[in-house]
Length: 369
Image 1: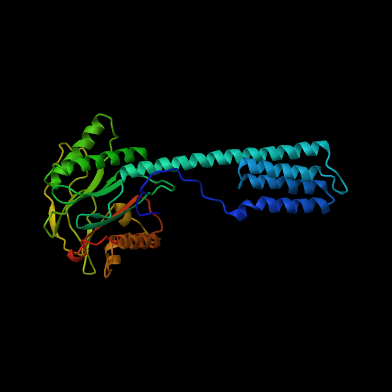
Image 2: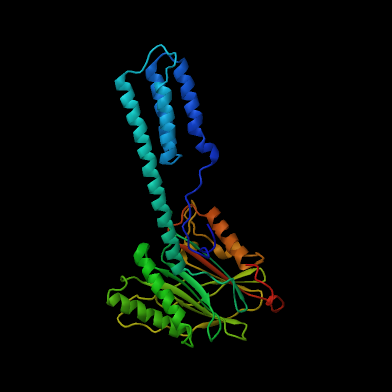
């Protein structure tokens, strides 16, 4: 699984079948021909020959399956010196099996083409929700990872992004309740509101209020389902070695500095869209020191709620103690590989976002992450 969605959307061919697998039907045809030549029982010989086109149907297209079927039928009809010959009924049955094999191959090829199209559409939808994350935004190197809890799914209810703004780079990492298309549409709406709000709102509380207002208004008018979402907002003010953080029901991030993983206590505000008696306007953001070479690690609760076989939650902070962070990308890779080894199961989507303040001496060099 890649760390981010691809840079472009295009149809991808189905997974290529190795050449040696494609040649198996020809090898099976040769074996079946020898079997028919030296086996006195035509029933057994016929069964062996009918297997050949069926095998071809699972590894070859309908044209080549038809070619294998014709060759197999030619061997059956050939005037070979065998003790007994196939009668007319036997030949009809063999021909029906061969025709069925060609049909199976045609259906399989159509199914694969549809699956490729569906995966490409899912990739396009994912890129809409999680647009390409810049490797560097101002003086900050960034890397993000998303993993869906649903097997085979590419998209879900998590969202994250880092964008420049007139007030310094700003970050969002959110988690919409539930899975499926309802969560996807809500996540897409919240991300679009964030992109607009960061250009106008001076405070993170104002951004959170606009997210809250939009999710309530859209749900009231039926544009999105009545879901709620947690969100972490961060701002890196220009000319300041601090980061401002505001949590709306979201897990607090970690800051990695000097081989230590520092847990930040944010005292989160209510989640977005909770529909209290009267909406609560988010409070002020918390300022935390954040100097050059230090890394902010934000994540969804799916990461820290991963359990091992004994039912224990993943202890992210303790596993990061003493870790040297060469780049945000390496940190993300370490965390994902570590939780994959630890967890017996993951029941929720996982999003991880790492942002490192680049040291002044490295700001003019390309980001390693």
